[in-house]
View 1 (tube, rainbow, N blue to C red):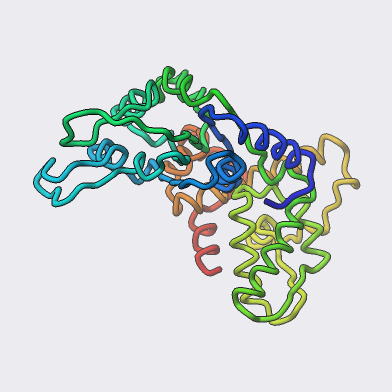
View 2: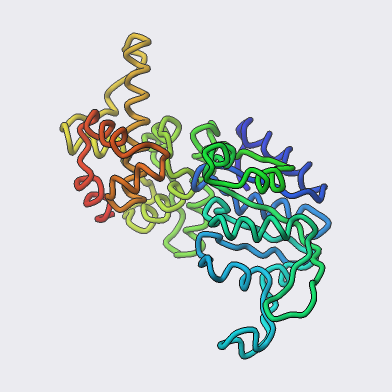
Length: 327
């Protein structure tokens, strides 16, 4: 974990405290903020570090297979059960079970997990009796679970069980100066992985790094650096800001020439908000592959409101998705 911003250092202090207790942990944060990395830090900083860390993507588990995946099964439990399957909980015995995207669990799956959390007893499919588990549960979500629970989309009693320890990860835009540090790290990693020599960022790139909103957070930064490292023909990499690039295509104006200090406060504020909205909408559309309905759902807005924002900024979803498909 790399960073020196106050927000990052405060997060590390909380991680260290959480690691030394045994209570369940809920990690919340935007996509790409490093929730699994934090979960691993909690595990390897705890007394369970010598035992398994088992990550699970809840969104990838079919509703009908939740119990089978978590609790396992005995041979002959159903037609295709040719041998015993220990299940994820058994695999994580004495260690940590990390449930990522827990908000993706269906109501039925939430009941199954809640029942297990009450006493850590479970019964594999086809077994005659229950078994006792000794695992620490760490869960993560890129959606505010409290809001979901209030809306009836997530069980409130399950939220109480998993939110004993709570950690909200800061977005990369809130970690002043860390984007450049992370970029340097990814450049070093690229040099070792691809063997194309050491490369550095151009001062102009470093300048907009500190002002860009990073809607995709660390994952966006990492992918950008890997791509530009491989494409760069010189040792000095000058990357054009995604927001500037899209604006150039639409209006033919280089926004790098715009200085906030040359504006009145309200005008500068309007400029910054517009920049954020454009980059955020762009990232949402890219993740949704141009599907406006899906993009609106990802960011927690109604489709109509999302469409109004696109119209407000004159953003063409086809232009955005086609542009980035070429990168």
